[in-house]
Amino acid sequence: MVSVFALTAQEQLAEQLPGTLFAYPMAPDTCSTLESRCNYIISHFWENYDISKPITDMEAFENTFRDFVDFFRYSHRNIVMGVVRDLVNKAQSNTSNLLKLGEVAERALYGPGAEYWSDEVYVAFIKPIAANKSLPKEVRDHYASQLTRINAVQTGSTLDFEYIGADGLKHRLNELPESESYIILFLDDSTDSSIGRLRLSTDVALNALLESGNATLLCLSLNNYSAEWATTAQAYCEHWIVGCSENLSDQLDLRSLPCCYVLNSERVIVNKSLSVEGLMRAVNPGF
Image 1 (cartoon, rainbow, N blue to C red):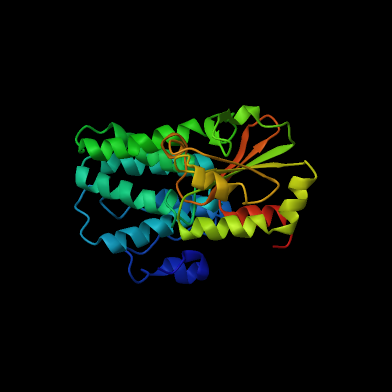
Image 2 (image 1 turned 90 degrees about the vertical axis):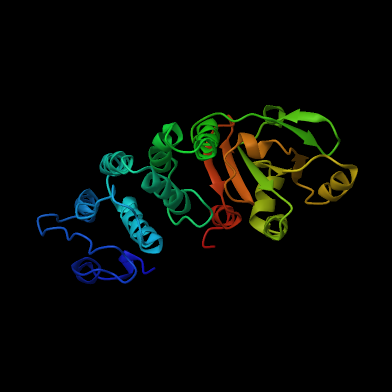
């Protein structure tokens, strides 16, 4: 798929792009700002497409949907939310289309391959799907569990949970030493997690931040405690606190691993689902 913002305004909107469903609307000259142009485009985006009719070309539908989402980052929040609600409402007349819309929204707004992450927008798509009794129970349960995890760890909420330390004892997040900020690194047994852990453990800027006491890093493995794990984990990094809990993936929004949460001194979430690269950019200016 070619991003609509890789093309000029005339090229991207005057004709149908390859692999998409239709030509996108063109904002009139009276829309003089980027935001006003994008507001116009998403407001009229689906006007010539009947979302209630069967979706026969899923690849083109997803390409079109991803281009639609591309405009969100430059549009006004209220416009985005209104357009999303209208699209979902229209799709509800065809449960097969509603299900496909949810699948595409998950990949474009929530999953590891999403180019634009927005809990607020994604929730607007999946909340009606989770409540639609015309859909299979396993589908509704899938999206309902996502809603539960997203709502449990919204940005601005206070975080606390239990985990097992390398000492084999139970600990809570709110028992960590006082710090200006907290970084929680969530890992699994994948190669990506191992590489991400190694990169952070050797990052000079991050280690300096931890050594100064301005930040505390808690590294949590999503597995059961074992003596073998504890021996390995204690060698991760001398400035890290380590722990494990196999239940956290059911409680927290951990959509892609490894990932980091950043909390302030009051353990309020200021950033979540941050990649290792994102954390390194935050602590290394010019990274």
